Length: 153
Image 1: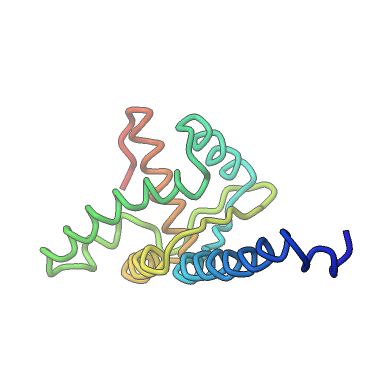
Image 2: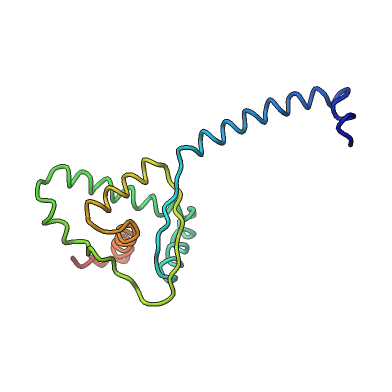
């Protein structure tokens, strides 16, 4: 179909609506995506596979699975640190140098809001570790609790 034929007659009305809706859709997409960011979590291929399998088991996206665990952990941690003055004594529960499993390395992309990313960055800085180290530590604690074994300090 030629442009002239499209612009004339019945299709001219559709073209007007099309540009109107295109503007609305673009605005909706850009406003909702403007408040989003992503965190790249470096981990072993084995850890990445475990994250994907647990996410699939819970019928969540990888980002949804990781953020669900992190949100619960951050809620507890923020309440704990807000009520305690001795931050350094609690800082021993997470190694400052992240545990790196041997083998091939990969990364997992976690999409989240700017607010969620800020909370994660703040918690990692509070623990004096990397974002990846904090996220993986939190996931390991969750997996350990799910297996019924307490995580060693």
